[in-house]
Image (cartoon, rainbow, N blue to C red):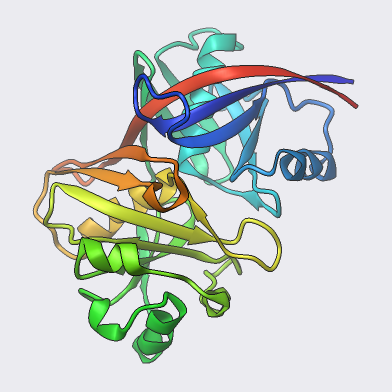
Length: 284
C-alpha cells in the first residue's frame, strides 16, 4: 500500500515558509486501521497528523491524531486539511467554501487565497475548581498574582482550560512543570491555554498539551484554543463584535499568527495562513 501525504504549515506568516504549526495530511486514509493511523502520527511526531476520507455529510471526513491519541477537533489540522481537500477536489463543489466532517461535528471552512477561516461550534463551559488555583499557578511556574481572572474550562470541539494572565510578561514567564499533568480535561487530556489581557488587540498566547504519553509540551499554534478563547469572551460578557490577533509560538521558535472573530450573533471564527511545503509517499 502506497500512501500519499503533504506537509503544510498553518497559521504561518506569508512569505516565511518555516513559520506556523506543521501538519502532515494523508490524502486518502481508506484501508488504514485506527492503529495504523496512530502509528503514522507517531512516526511523523508532529502536533497532529490528519487522514482524509469520503463523507456523505460534508465535502470530506477527517480524522485527527496526535502522536498519542485521536482528537475530535483541532484548529490547525482543520485549516491545513481544508487546503489539501481543495487541491485534491475529491468531491463536487470542493473549492474555497467546503465542509469537513469531524468527530466533533461538521465544520464549515472558507478561503481567500491561502488564508482559511473556520466557524467553530457554539461553546460549552464549566467552572474551574477555585481551590486548585494556587496549585495551577505553581504548575505553570507562576504565582497566583499572575492570574487576571479565574480560569475557565471551555469547549468548542475540544475542552481546554483557559487561563487569563495579567500581562504579556506573565505569559512569557510561564514554565510548566510535571505537575501540569494533574490538570487534565474531562477526557483525561492536558490542554492548558494561557493568554495576555483580552482587552488588547494583539494577544500573546501559549498552549501546553500532552503530545506523547506522560509528557507535556508547547504548541506553536492552536486553532481550537483560539476558538475556545472566543467562547471565553462570550462566557465572560465581553463586548461584541470582538476581533483579536493572537501571537503564538514565540517560545518554541515557530512564530504564528491567528485571527479570532466573534460576531454580534456569537459566531466564532478562526483564521490563518496555510503554507504548503511539499509531500511524498509512504509504502506499507
